[in-house]
Image (cartoon, rainbow, N blue to C red):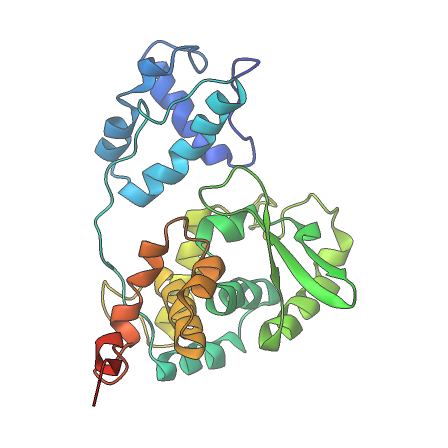
Length: 273
C-alpha cells in the first residue's frame, strides 16, 4: 500500500479484505495515522469473522505500522477473546482413526494433518510454510515456523516420529522441485493454500475418520490434542508453552484442567503425616 506501510503480501486474501475496507472509507492505502483504522476490528466482526481470525488479519497491519515506528497497540485492538476452551481434544481412538484415514490421502494432505497432530500447528502457520522451511541440519530434520502472532519465522521444530517419514516422502515427491521460498502447500490453482482452505481440508478428513461429531471438535482440536499430549508426557508447563508458542504461560496452564486427575492435582501432595 503506501511505500512505508505495506502489509505482508503472502496472504493475498487479507490484503484484498483490507483494500475493501479502505475503499469503503475512501482510502487507497494504509493511512499514516492508524487512528483512522480504529473501527476496523468492528467492521471485521460485522463481516462475520471470529475474534481469533480478526487477530490474524490485524497482525500484518500492526506490523506494517511497527516497521514505520508507529505504535498501534492501543489503537487497533482485536475483540477480546473468551477465556477457556471452545474446542475439545480428540480421543486416542479418534486420533488413530484419523491416522488410518490419512493412508488414503495425498502426500500434501497427510503432511498437513501430520503437522496439526504432531506439532500442534495452527492453520495460518501451516499456510505460511515455504518449501525451504523443511530442511536438514547436522543430520536432523527441522521445520522453520512463523507463529501466528509473530512477525517472522523465529521458531523451529525438530521433526521426528511418524511425521518425519510423512514429510520426507512429501519432500521427495513434491518439494524438491520447488524453490525454497515457494509455498509448501498449494491448491488446484497453483497458489498458496489459505488458512481457511487448510482448515476445511483437515475438517473433511476428520469427518471421514468419524471424529467430527460436535461443534467442539474442529481442526483446532488437533492442536489442542498435541499440546495436551506434551503435558501428559512431560508434566512440564514451560515445555508445553514453548511447544504451543503461547506468549503467556497462563494460556498453557488451562490445559492442566483437562489432564490432572484428583490424585495428580498439586494440593494432593501436601501431606505432613
